[in-house]
Length: 209
Image (cartoon, rainbow, N blue to C red; front, side):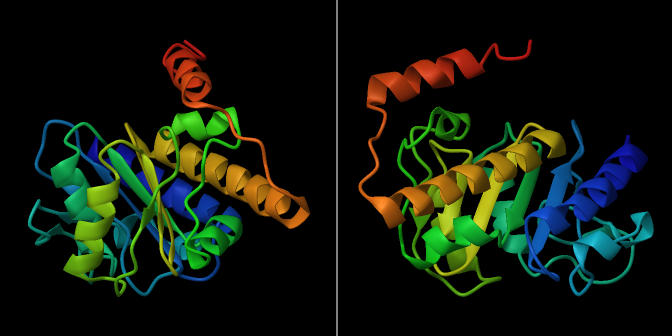
């Protein structure tokens, strides 16, 4: 299972090039039933990451497997795993349109039913310096009801039951962020009301099953 998770991190690390540039992103996955988290390293662009580069850390951030340093956002990943025991993976990107909204300090409302994949909206976490405990606390604090959040003047983070789910959500949030930016450039978008977005969220529970 450990090898499968490490390989999956490499696969999705290469796919991160679709959402971010350079080393502007990181990802991790938790080993089911064990107090071990696999995380991308710092200083290596995700698309260039190899299996041996992936580090195994404990719940306090101590490196248990591999050499080198974990992602600079290790505190953010650990905070989300602590506050959301049900999640199995975390994806952080600097995707263009989501980051545009983050720099405008705009949360993403229910502009499209796909927002329902994350929650009733995509909330905005207040700005804090990257890689800090302050940022980790602020982000985990706004993600109690959402599987995605914008980080003010920074980027996007998503969570899911596994890497596939967390990465897919990052893609979908980038899509709705682009829609939101385009709508705002033309006029005032019409939003789904709470009952409509809740209906979508309910339907997503059985979608594709």
